[in-house]
Length: 151
Image (cartoon, rainbow, N blue to C red; front, side, top):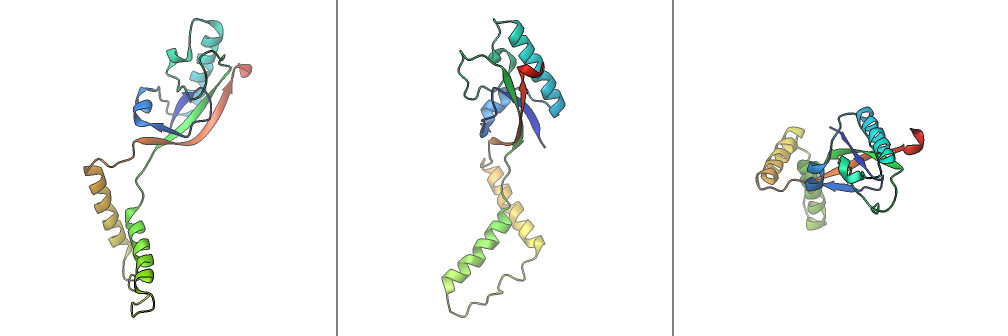
């Protein structure tokens, strides 16, 4: 599920969990655009205010540069991969390289059903989650620019 945050510019690659927790989040693009517009108006009208007063992700902008636009960043939490598929794909590659020209049947994994792949995926995913090996970043899906000139 996507959420939207406001950033100083669109040059954001990933956002860490600690950073993400401190930011204002919006459920829709429209809500975030409206909030970004209001922030730009307030920054333009009151020179004593800074982007830091509004829960904006700082990115790479220097403090002395004027804020004339803001980016809306659509983010999604990072997900664990499908371990079942990864394991069976690599087992197939392993069997080819390990056995070479010996009597290893090419179809030795053909009997593996989707149900078994899903079961293996759940097993490995639960192991990862139980041991705290879950992604702690958010990926960027899209970015949209809101400009002071549009106000």
